[in-house]
Length: 372
Image 1 (spheres, rainbow, N blue to C red):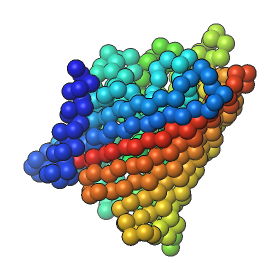
Image 2 (image 1 turned 135 degrees about the horizontal axis):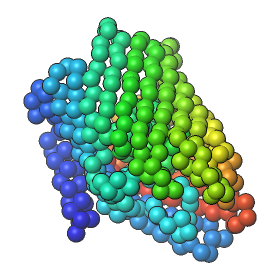
Image 3 (image 1 turned 120 degrees about the vertical axis):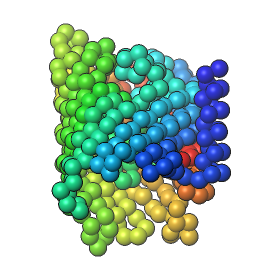
């Protein structure tokens, strides 16, 4: 019943946003918006994987949000998340054909008992105050239930599972372990072409069932040159010692460093890269990440709102069963209007195991998204 209601809500949202337009202000202080998306993906595995079947599954996500701005320096924000079905995500590792999810969206199981808190559907609820020191100089302070990925590991071409790449390796850096939807605070400082952000969170539960604290800092440079706009960021992550080591005998901290760069290359092309290096102390599926790709704007073929994305990810040097994971993804996004878009997506994934047989195959998908 809940699945049906979620699908119905998503369909109503899609219809309403297309009919009546984009996000709108209820008055000068209140505004509503959000996203509704559905996807169907078909997994075709290699013939040498007899323990797994080819399969096709769908899923939907509906994330409405409300903001209230009592002044031009203050903002209250609430975001809800509802999911229907889990697509090709599989919560049982023994039954998962690939280690990575082919769609990183928060689906049915992701929005229940969030971080072991017993909280369902409430993704974010925070207050932010901004101090302004000049036209291009500000400091924002936010606190509440936050999402670390709203502040760190940003990327212009590879950061949105609803309109860009779908595979989780190309949406964020999986070895960067930025948690979402828990208690914390964030600082955002901007001055001209420079920025700095900091995040601190208390997370209810990790994969070991332990509560932990999370800290991250990001430093950015955002130049505008003859090529176009660019963003160059370095991010540092750390946690408290609440993650089990590979021997399951003691607890250790997680640490990682990530570089996330994106750059326009004229009016048609853009390029992006992520490099990440983790710490070997706790259990890690992958320690290092190298990913990158290109973006091609639809101006090239007289479809200025459309785009093509091509990306590749290489994840390696963990301390578990997987030696190396390869991810290739390409998509075409067709934009109907400023609300509705549809994406045709193809992925190839390969997990190379130390002892077991490798797992490899293709994932073909279609995604429809309404941003309202």
